[in-house]
Length: 103
Image (tube, rainbow, N blue to C red; front, side):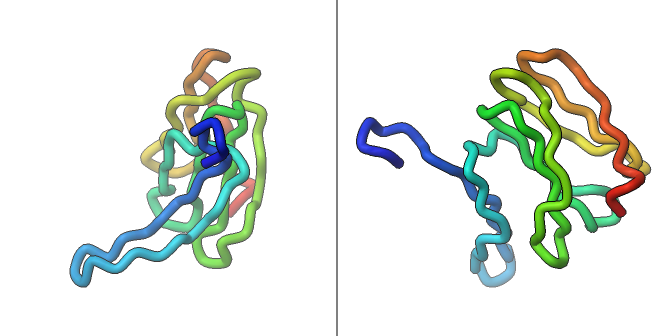
C-alpha cells in the first residue's frame, strides 16, 4: 500500500489447502480484481483496475500477453469451458478474447 492507503500492485497467490502453505505465483503492477485459470491449467488470466487483462503461463510464471480490456477497469475474467476464449467485463462492456495462439 502507498502512504494514502491505496494499493500499489497485486499478487496472485496459490494456497495449498492440505498444509495451509501459500506461495506467490505472480506479482502484477496493477491491482488484480479477478483471476481465472484455463480448463487445462496452463494459463492464468488476471484483470483489474488498470483496465488491462494479463495472461500468464502457469508453469513458467511468465507473462504471455496483455490486452486492453477497458479504459478504466475490468471487473471479471473467465475462460470458456474449452479454453479457446476468455470473456471479460468492465467499464468497456463485455468482450471475448481468443486464446488459441497462447497455448
